[in-house]
Length: 149
Image (tube, rainbow, N blue to C red; front, top):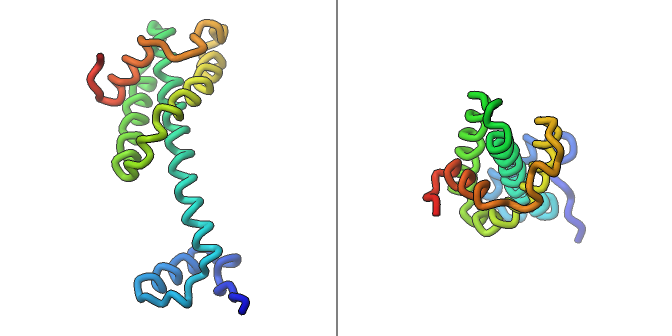
C-alpha cells in the first residue's frame, strides 16, 4: 500500500511540521509522513555539523588576524571571537555528540580560515602556517575558555 504524503509538506512546510509534531505527541504513528520526516531529521543533524564548521572557521579567521596583525586588532575582531566561542559552546552543550567532530572540523576550518584571513588582511597566504601551530592552539583554547597547556 502506497503512503499518501500529508497535505502541507510541499505547499506549507510549517503546517506539515506542526501536524507531524502533533501526530507524534498524540501517538498517531499511522499519520506520520515517515519518508519526509526522516529526511528532515537527517537534515537537522547535518545543519548542526555545518553550523559547527562555520563557527569554527569564523573563530579561526579572527584568531589568525589577531595573531598575525595584532596592530590592527579591533573590538569588532575580539567581539567576533567571543561571540563565536560562545555559540560553539552553546551548540556543543545542546548536542554533546558533536564534540567527537571538533578536532577534525577544526583542522578543516583552519585551512578555510587561512585562505579567508589572507584575503581579509591582504597578507600573503604563506604568512599563515599550513597547519595549526601551538600558538594558534593556545589562542583557540583561550578563546574557548579552556585551560592552556
